[in-house]
Length: 399
Image (cartoon, rainbow, N blue to C red; front, top):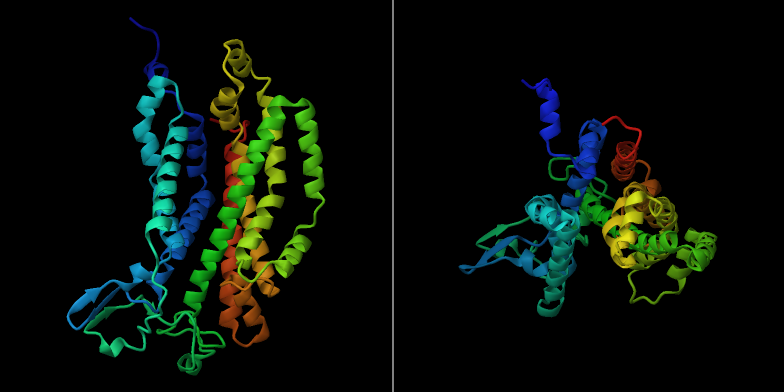
């Protein structure tokens, strides 16, 4: 008769948990992390669905017995690509689960394969949109012509994105049933301005930090793994870039760029080429530690090529602090963009621009209150999520 207790026997036969599953289990125990993640997903979804929530282009338009769907013609290729990225991102865990059995048989990483497949699918879709689709650019004046339609499905808050003389009668209105958050000094609905400001915040955060982290991970892994003169040269480059004042550089570039270049993307470019140094240092430190581990030594002894060792083993095991840095970096990018818009250096729909409008008319408390709350909540949830991830990947946690 076996003397092993049932609990110990079950523990021996249980399937070992992956590092990602352990970290996710720790995150689920923290209510602040789950609430923050929910708020971030809600902000991203609201930014994507902005034309369906507040706007002037109807979803469905019936005139003279003919039905059309104008909003799908007016959406830009970038908006369709953002929709695809959001859906593919939500479907990533499902793809990982489907690919895990095959990956375990072949010794691969299910996350790596899923990311590769989803990335390739997104690139194909984005390329097809650019090559085959031309968005509708002619303004339809649907709000002014709504009496001509047999039936029309407008967004939840039907309001013009570019207020005209008709909207001036609605200027500086406090929150009401028609305008849940009120209107600004031009009569524009604040819900619409917050939604399109969320688009700017999400875009500059994810795109700038995504590009910067990719550059930092690539250079940091090479520097930390190979060392020597490569490490010395890259470290000197990092020191030079770190001495560049980011805000001054952004102001200088905004002053000299041609009018054909959107200021927002100029800011994204500056953030991408200046923010990679932090990710570089994190990745370099991780690779300096990892290259001395036993499994790296064993892989070298087996004759595994350096590029394969980096891509399959070293880099995936060093990405944990990068994820934490990226979360804090997005919060910093959102705050910096709001600062630039508050100073009127970037002319795009932004929470900072809305906050500046409210500052000039302090009596309209709903304007600066809504903008300040949006900035505060967004930065707060990113910081809370970053702290939760940092605690979850701490090797001293109890598993």
